[in-house]
Image (tube, rainbow over all chains, first blue to last red; front, side, top):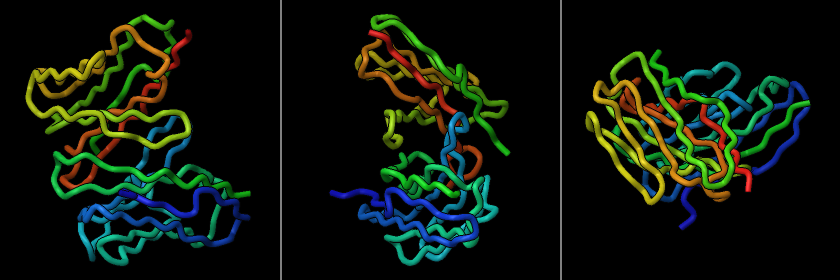
Length: 113
Length: 111
């Protein structure tokens, strides 16, 4: 059982380039999330999708866009990458409901030069 | 918005010593979840607490939810090198579909 799969695992971009991070889950979860993790900052929510067809901003949405392509897939796009977006990006999913745990992918390590 | 504050940010212990991390909020939490992230890995769900004063144990780990549901703690008895990692608390109180994480406590265990 693959769980949550993120691609790519590593990426280096130049400032101003665009990129889409892919995420897919095979657990039939309704809710999906994108976080970024910076040293000492914990996990900060970028965008989330409570269910197929809906997306909402999290704590740090500026500079990002998302697409909930279908129930399985939730992508994160950087239109014009900036060095401040260098981070580790995690995708997560969970069944709808406040009591449900989140399941995380392995992360994408993104460096922007 | 709703925040959960976690302390300490970092702690190193000798193997065999105990360890505790605390999670605090200024508002009442509907639930608290705890996650562990090994170095280079991703967060993994450990447990959830829902009830006021709730205490749950997983082997050497003890999780508590405060009576007022504004704080929580994770205590590890007799740490081992396998306990190394960052421990996060998180709560969905800020929004039904959102999970807001604390900044985490990084634990280093010296053999």
